Image (cartoon, rainbow, N blue to C red; front, top):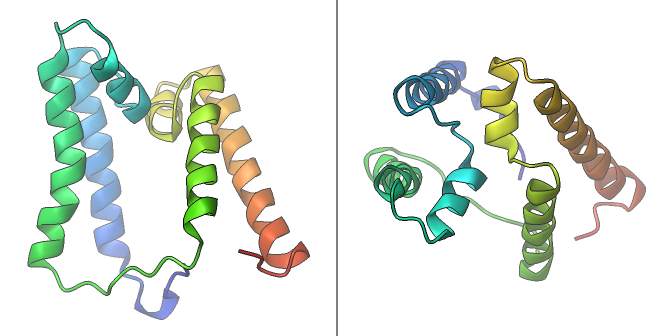
Length: 146
């Protein structure tokens, strides 16, 4: 997957970022909850039903909003060039890293950095550096192996 820089539209990206920030702030101010997807999903899997409704609404919003947007917008088809086994292993590694880091990219990178939490700075810097190194190794040292 590559970014089509000549056709990149900065305004929708900016508005999307602002909406993510606004939604995270609203969830924190109104519900006293961090908008970390792994924590929200993990809470759904626990047996305590007391705060299940907002978690279901959050996850449904994550699934339905892009689907609805896709129906009303003119977007190119997504083409994933990686094999399914590699995607599966990558997903499992991300899940492991999420548990190891006590949170996911949304919880640490959006909410944690906004609260200036030291462990979120450490986690975000770690996963960003790991991502940069991984892409460099795969694309430049291994010759774009898939």
